[in-house]
Length: 398
Image 1 (cartoon, rainbow, N blue to C red):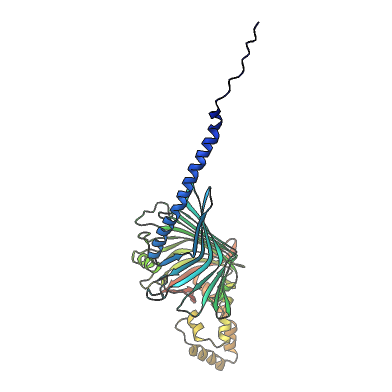
Image 2: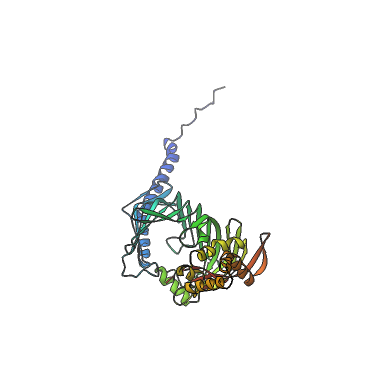
């Protein structure tokens, strides 16, 4: 029987190149797409810079480059420089701008998701005000931000710092102003809000924070979390912050403190309520506050030391506005004249009296299983009152 076995027909040679050819075409197409996207970075960046410049914030780079092929776009800004014009209530448009400089900003985006931008910042940053004899230096271990929604209206923004430190520099003297282990700020457009009346939800978290030269209460480390909702915005058109705050006030907008909690050692405080603005840009409103460990707060106010040092008028204006230094001296002298030692006893027991005064204004409460007092924290024309005691003064926002 003849052998019917046939040799296999050889496959056409061109079929061997189908897969590699498709891969090569795909790679070429992707490369074209990446380089096209990279070429658009300058266009998008310049459009964003122009928008920010209208808001009084002028950004520039000594050197800008694009990398990250094949899946990412990495825009590196070396020698970053920011000029701030009319960003605070006291800064006139005719004044020289406040400037900030930092070594490098790296902005990253996935080619397939360009609306999500992640940025990393290289410390330190130097902030200079030509109208002041001092400057500020900001340092951090890591600093990063994320923005969702560009190049249109951002839908969500986050900013995170690890080990941030802010110092004032005057000549060769460097003074600490702020320290923290961790700070993060998140913001998003509130669900259900409209483009012509947008509302913003914000969350601020601080771990191990301390602030110097403001108030003794803030000098000791504390943890804080504040959730707020801002209303009264008309739009997201570019404009300086004082102008935006002025529009919020005119529209009857306010910041609703939805939830807040501060802990400093044994002291725990929570507060909720609305804060608005007066026609001249100062905070006003009332927060309902509940505090556990209130007895820890009064000694930090420094009332006893204030009496021992003769009650400087500046200190008295801060904690008891309207009362004059000579009035206090005369009162203590009269007490000692009537009953020797009585004036000194009053000084030694001033903290007890202040605590009793605040307790009289509040009501008994319980907070996280501890005895607490509930009372209002009042904001009156920028002044902050804890019960009858003025604890801070906040400058106007426009």
